[in-house]
Length: 473
Image 1 (cartoon, rainbow, N blue to C red):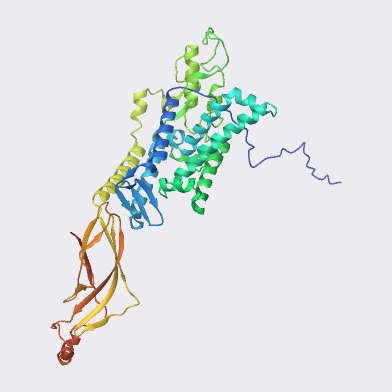
Image 2: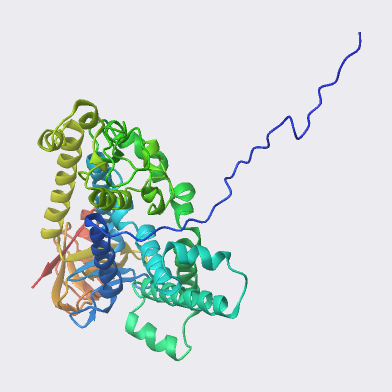
């Protein structure tokens, strides 16, 4: 009995790739209610991002993260590394807001305000203005090389790169005074790190928004993978009404769809053509969907032309679609335990952060013992020690402070010119000498050695706790 070896041939096996080769997507321009909101958020986010570094506040940049000085200016507030708790609160508020919005209406952040979506919209707008709409871009890419094609492509990429560089410059302007940065950029005096981050952030913007686009959302962004954990049957998502749309099929406007046994979907592919990630929403909710609602606007335009009611593709919930809820019933279910818990925790953290900022002490003090100097007897009956007191004025106006100490009998501060004046947001180390007079002692000369010896041991040897008292005047 012979043994027949198992043979593998290319005909018998289908090669599988672990990476899906990208097919270029040519999104079609669309207009409508949701498109208007996307434009609004593009303008709003970019006015904030590009405009904030140029605002002035009390003679300085309104928003500046000065890493070298370890000061973070946000309008009238100055934060220090010791204020890390506020950054923690901000991150918690951002995370809970994302959870809340996602539980209510899916990927609102992704569809309207995510930087990847916003800059992709900007770059696609530039592309449409230079190369034309969808069909014109397809024809241009399919056309053989020519001078006209070279000029059009060069013009598009030049515009892309200009936007990307300006974005990188603005980003660095949050960490270095942007006006001074501009002067040094014009005179070719930028520091190496400043130049690196301008080019790096600009290149990232150019690559992500111009070339990678939907690949970032599908493969690089983790949110697409865990979004379903925050969804439930009462989450508003962009949904195709299968019962109303099927069976789909092309027809003329005059065709009676009910007599022809057809649904409202005319299979025009508009919903696919306008999608920036190239999915077919009629196949159901997919992780690639960023919730931009471009398919909703595109489908509603077709429904309007056909004389059909809008909303074949719309924001709705799984329960509303299955149980036939009207709009009021659907929105009432938005206030369910999950969203109420998210909202309550969000309000509690935001309220605590705002309250803490309102009651924030404008002074921070760090006390460091000078380990290079031991306690010494400065005069008969007087023990002296040296400390470094770091005073930080976290206010936006100059202040004066006094330093005192308590905890030992006769303890006093010497060698410090008081009051101490600090400019706005200034930090200054102060060398402070503390002198403690032994109990029963008064100031005396060197000839009082015998009386001094009688009382020298009244202060027990060892470590004694003292307190610095810093007051604003």
